Amino acid sequence: MARRNGAAGAGRPAPAQPRPRRGLTEAERALWQLYTVRAQVAPLPGKALPAPAAAPPAPPPAARQAPAPALVPKPAPAALPHRGVELQIGQAPAGLDARRWKSLRRGETRPERTLDLHGRRAQDAHAAVRRFLHEAQQDGLRCVAIVTGKGSIGQEPGVLRRELPHWLNAPELRPLLLGAAHFAAGNPGAVVLLLRRPRGLRG
Image (cartoon, rainbow, N blue to C red):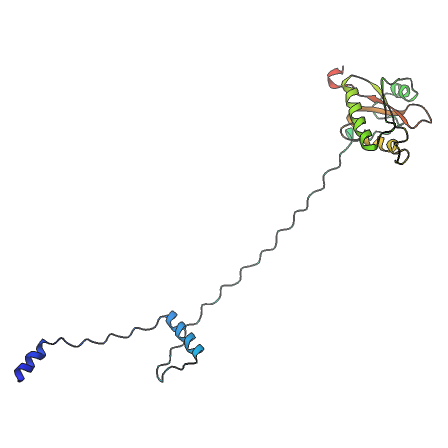
């Protein structure tokens, strides 16, 4: 019997050795601690989990950059009249010889074309003045007249007469003009204008 037992024992496989216990990872420890806290489960005596590893320090806050200063748009430069000289009706302009100015002021230089603004509103009159002066210079005229009148019904009296100097000093019209005077003394509603020659006709 002893031999049989010995033979039988020799044929049996050796019992498996217990595997060594693997330590918990940081993630497993954190999960277990969260579970025990929520379920209020205390670990077995002598089986307390080691203290969790301290959390890595938070990165320092990034330095705040000062906001870029807002770009303030530069104001557009005011449009200057021709050569920076304002055209004033009734005053001798610089650069015009005295003889020609006296002839214009005394009415000796007769206008070759006249624009009558009677009954026009300001917007329509402004467009008519621009068109009239450009066409007059292109046609080679030297002296023209503009009659402002008292304005149309519903407008303040003299509004066209008051606006005409501003229109004449606009950048698109001022380079066309040499001088301006009233057609006759005591008649501010009519203005005679001395035009520059177009470049192609100078000489």
